Length: 113
Length: 264
Ligand SMILES: Nc1nc2c(ncn2[C@@H]2O[C@H](COP(=O)(O)OP(=O)(O)OP(=O)(O)O)[C@@H](O)[C@H]2O)c(=O)[nH]1
Ligand SMILES: [Mg+2]
Ligand SMILES: [Zn+2]
Ligand SMILES: [Zn+2]
Image (cartoon, rainbow over all chains, first blue to last red; front, side, top):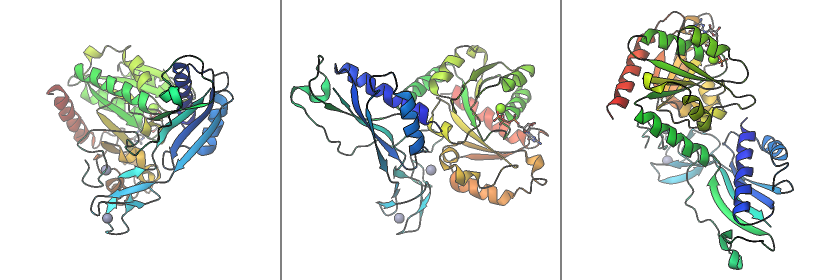
């Protein structure tokens, strides 16, 4: 639901970065979004179309890398793949909520020229 | 670190946002334009690596709020729930019952109306309304601006009523000391499982509208068991803001928390 706020921040960071480097426009924006980040890809895309208009990123390409959730088991000292926030370790069957991946809301890079 | 699940929460401290990524990020160097710190026109496309969280700015502002509130010796609560779970009623009742002991001020976020603010003001509580429009959560910047309009020196506890929403507010640290999540007996017992980030990040979980539990067919055991699984950092209170039942435990807890802030 907060995709517009997230995208606004992303476009702002991209534009600031481009400006600081002396570039005239942003040609691509790469984000890394966790599958458990609470954002919906379609809504992000929609927000992107709205938010970039009239900015240096107006004609930029959006690339979103989706990150699958990975949980850490402190008992086994090992990561395991998961679907959710709280997960049962497949090895020792203890519960863990220590997500190592899947909650990302990151800006990876911007391409400028 | 939390013993229960090994997460980064615990010890009453709320830390939000993604984990930091210490994994090797590739750095593309493009001749003289490495990392693009050189001003002037750039010939071809140039990739600038950022690898930063989009929540960074909010987190920074939240830390600033936290420092500011701490200096003012304020205990700050961020109250979240689904729409209509009883946040405003609970905050009003808390303020009324604390009158003469602790002074409460409220920042209330609402999508469109100022009904909540009006209701609190009628009860004699200092309140600032933030109309968020289409924004479904409060952020640290909105809170800083609203707090500046309150006479903070005359307050002991600052309560922030977030927008009724269990998704988005989970990601936004406001600079609070305690995150308080409400679960009313008229909503499903499985709410904690439907909104785990919110319930997991809570320091306090309030089961509200206990007076309606029987009528609503509320499965208390199930709800408490779900809370203990997801909200395992949280202190749990069961109460009715309407009848006042169970309020005492919560008010005592609040007084202890406020004393802890003052003694730091
Ligand atoms: N019976 C009973 N009703 C309650 C209780 N707490 C709140 N209510 C009622 O529930 C309704 C919603 O309460 P509010 O306090 O406005 O809820 P809210 O969470 O602030 O709502 P939003 O700000 O719109 O998200 C009102 O009609 C309240 O009178 C309670 O403990 N018992
Ligand atoms: Mg309200
Ligand atoms: Zn294990
Ligand atoms: Zn935990």
